[in-house]
Length: 166
Image (tube, rainbow, N blue to C red):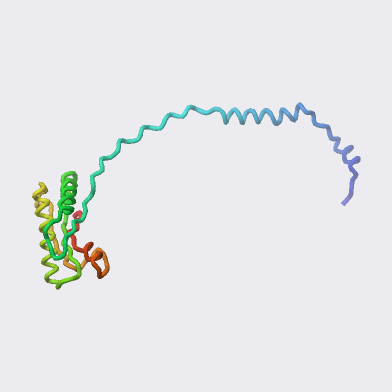
């Protein structure tokens, strides 16, 4: 490999000094074109107005009972009014009302109590204007607890009529 000095290299290549005007033209013109393209914004149309809010109908809720009772409490009657309204709004839907109990008592007794609870909820729904043909009842007694536990808090959650869309 042969080494060449800078002076010899300069003579061989015959480098020309760059003129300032040519440098400016080669940088400024493309820069102006780029900036012009970026600044050419079309007016953005305003976003469409949001859709009107949907009317929210509360869904089906459970009703709860006192120990060894199938009579409806005041809070249960209010929940059944909400459930009946849901049935009116959803006119083609059918519902299964499941009667449940806590773990105290025999299986046979709890199945009968669960049936009485489901029927009391159904009767109130019919009194509120729901067609009986849209309501079915079933008793699970103590077989399908909602809350696991062996205390009053768990038992209170398990004494209920549960509403399920069919």
